[in-house]
Length: 201
Image 1 (tube, rainbow, N blue to C red):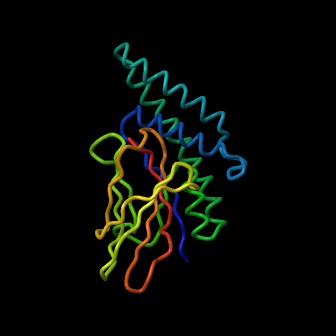
Image 2: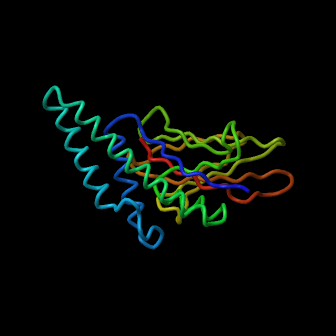
Image 3: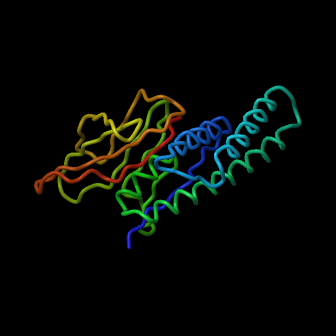
């Protein structure tokens, strides 16, 4: 049975990781979708705040990086617990609804369809605010329609392409965006794909 997997795709840089963590907290603050996050968001928010302070301290004095790294590990464990909470909610929903829920959580969506290239990816581009969208190519000639959104409700269309990839530029850094695509072949227009999310660098 198809299942949507919640992925914790944490950025490597500490400042990006802090921004990512704060975005997850913001997304999970929607109690209509996430009524009782575990651990409580206030606890995680305090840990993220401590990490933020520790990161600033490393810029001002030497010998405190180990304390910052330990603080990051605490936050990462908290995020992993929240990921598990979202997974529990997603498992109770049909696949399409689960994918939408996970995208709204600030985490990433990955379908557990086995190993190999995922059907749809969003990757940070070489410049800040740019994203490269890559879909699984159709076996026949096709055109690809692309959309992005900041809230998962209001969508902005990009130019259609004849290749299974597209670029988005001018997005706001440290903000989570949602992406989807559809295809048009001689058989007609497909439904929109699963929604995936990415915190733009």
